[in-house]
Length: 388
View 1: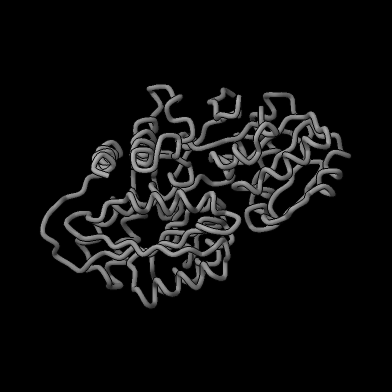
View 2: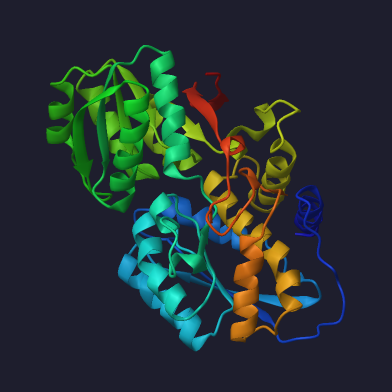
């Protein structure tokens, strides 16, 4: 654990965030966390939970308390957790949840209690369109449209004219269909099928047969975690020989394990963290991505790092940047501190993190640009940095 702490200290320096160590002046800063450590999204939530344990327990002389709850990939439980954390534990900020439906459900709680919330889910709808409620909400994963345009451009560069789409039958799938539809239209790619499946489905044979009947050049599977392997394995079983694309929602080793040989050759956009060591030295995210990778793998073992844990790490970095500024305006546990924390998050500029460089504004509570994505291919069961 001592070596892990040394890596974490080095990681904070590498990302441009430092902790000032002095006698505490105020009450503890409380951070409430709800992640999907069980249920269909457990392969995403577990590394997020593990990462929270690595975040510093003191920033700018203030002790930081993390209260971590599991919402079991259930939006109702996510709301219950958020209400407990804000009303009973009186947290100064919320981190979570892992998946889009849960995060969307938590927005009302964050707004009602004037508590800044940093989501670990991807859909742009979590922070857009900006309104009085979303003014309290931020997120660390890349927006769907940022990743969808990368897929559409890659498809166009590789001769794809027609694509079949299958996504989760929830807000994640709907957001991806909407955003990919925009990107495909600009790339002059026709979507010839639009199918859905649930995260806990055991079969998607009917949907796959409908997709294949349209003879698409490629398929895009808009799922997250291990459930996204099901459509691809079924397509392989049925003999589909076109190009396969997944979203950044599958960028972890559990997906590789479950999908196995059926995912060989698949393309996907991902945060730079996924292939951090393969990035050119000039890449502005390489140093900060490697800092998190070393911190996580020192604590949990070689090869254990996950891009989803990176989203939790980046939420921690945003708070480490914002807390010292907020302490100048108010005391933890008060409305003044929560508002100052929200304002400080909204003013984040040029903050290097594991997935990109954050520049947040009043109109953009995601704050990532094209530096937060790369195209990756699965080759020999491993992630390989790809070109255009």
